[in-house]
Length: 616
Image (cartoon, rainbow, N blue to C red; front, side):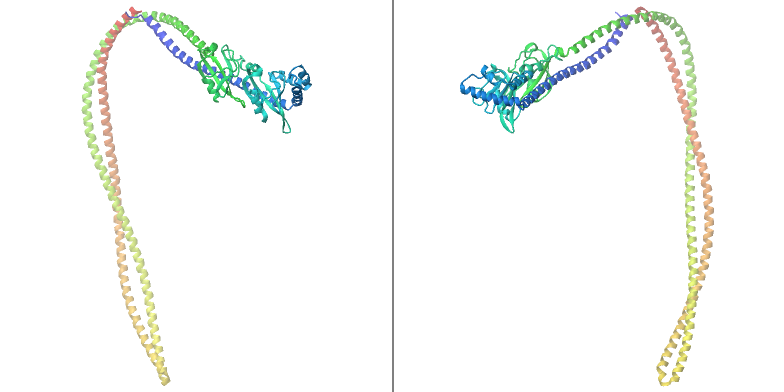
């Protein structure tokens, strides 16, 4: 059986309303739970640190008290007086600690010590002389008069403190103490020294009640929380404070994982199962840390039941569950109202759909007939456009061939123009060389004229020399026998002048030949220069012709390319038109098919309207 629309809508409201709420609730619960857990651990750690700091402070203050007291006149004088009384009573056999002894040691200074003990909440205040005898106690226990070095208390905590505190203030851990009827006792003491001389020692017996009051403070601990102190002496781990929420007294053995970590010097928190008292066998949170006190191996542990520590998480879970239930009720109410709001108008819409579907079917039948006629017309147009496209493609191919030919002719004309320009440049270089040759020939002609002038000068010089030689020969003949040698010299000089004249004639002949050759070269150079000028004119005219041809071919190539581009664009446009017509044709066919589908859809819609009317 099919579900009614109202039931489906309400179910959807519940689904979309409660699923996000559930997801948010889970995330909030997880994040808030983690935050509250972290807060619980942080509060537990804070309480632990508070107790730890108070214990450390208490021990430091007790050591300071012992140091201060050891420096007082009251401690020194009372110790000296009590030492003398003790020796006197031991010699006479009288009882130490009785009324006579009390009367003997009772002084204003000893009363100060009694007042100091009460104000400091100590169990006892003792004075020990340099030989290890307990000469004074405020409580007057059985330890009065005892020899710590050789007597029955030589293995006690008081004897151990006496051995440690000679060099300065020291603490001794809790241990059973016989004079206190076997109760646990811890001591702090400091030496009484003056100018380096040891007169004795002042000792304070720590109060268990004071330490318990620190650790049993209930602020921040709730109903199940507590803090306690543990210590290690040798291999034995035991309590150093009395517990209240679980069984455990000072001195009793106690050990677990958190205590072991704390005594090993670690600090932290952990979850474990309780082992004693009201917390036995239930999950608890435990926070632990070592207590830093010189001479002691202590640790403080703070615990609380997980149920109490995480009570806020439990309350949060119940709150989220309540919100979820309230939200579900609200979603149901809103869904019912919304369903009522939708169902009434939906009935009216169903009626309108039923009446309109018949009219739409008739109209679609007519549109289907018109669409079929349009599809036939578009098909014919498509055939014509395809033929036109084939023609345009052929024209485009021919135009592209012409453009390629024009482009090649342009390239050839540009190559010819470049070769003509190269020839013109070579002609200009040849002309420059011819002009340079002509300049050199003119320079050579000038040099040749200078040589001819020099040769003429030499010829004239030879004639003058010859005339001088002849005059010298005449003078030598006149001189007779004495001028013979001079006559020979004159003859040789005349010969040399003749040779110089002949050489000058040869030089003139050579210079004449060189001038004739120069004249011929000058004429040839002028002819060559004229020829080069004529060649340059022809080359320039050829270059101009090639430039005009290149310009003409460039214009023709651009025109051919533009024609090819236009035809290609026309071909592309025709293809686009063909594609558009095909698309129109396909659209027309799809319109026909779509109209048939719409008719089928209208029929289905009419059936759905009837079904919906039944459902609503």
